[in-house]
Length: 340
Image 1 (cartoon, helix red, strand yellow):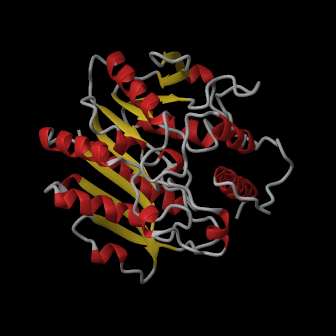
Image 2 (cartoon, helix red, strand yellow):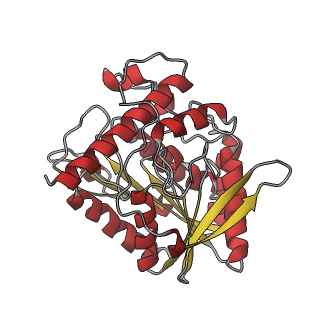
């Protein structure tokens, strides 16, 4: 492994450990996970220039909240891209530019605002700071199986705003880990046409569960962070709009985002006669039968990555190795093209 690849791998594992520390705090746990010097900022080499993007501000009606929103400069079908726990990191920004190179106009907000405790949101990669923000914000609920908190409604407003900026054009919404189920929650919006679910990690696992490999309750492993009323609204919207699609990406052996959520989603859709709206792309260890047993709705392949404490986790954004990342991104590109 090259030095830069080794540093990237260390940063990724640090991000995941810090995410677990946040989840422990959110659940009232005390933990012994060490994450390095408190407040230390992870390096973000080759950060794209902010001039590569155009910045706006989105105000949330009837609240005092507002969020900065950036977009790529080229034209194309609009994408609302949501960041994971560590914010608008260098890897995230480069992924936005790659989506632009595929022919999309990419919008992405900082869900933590800007500035973030004195740090610019653009390029923000301070996981410890993110943990504290999420715990204190009052807009996030990372443990409920029915709702992730007011932040989802704020993102709903952002989706409407982006569609308005694009003349009412239908959106692709892409989530990742912490925001992995957000696109699903927005599918009842007329402007949201495609929901991309990246290894949804909420409701969160407790740190001891991850370390000792103790599974969550089946209720939480299968939870989609939706109320029955929200699900019914989504099902109605899918029936009314035959072009709406759901696309999922996952590692089969993801230790902090149970893949049972995809099974739960498929079963719910099947019960509504909508199973053909969901396609998942899953990498599994050699010999694992997950994809083969679900070939009607899962496209699978093998990964060489072995299950560790908190990895493999990220897929198209920052997969465990280049081969996995390119597999996920290749399928994402093709799936989005087919969803047009």
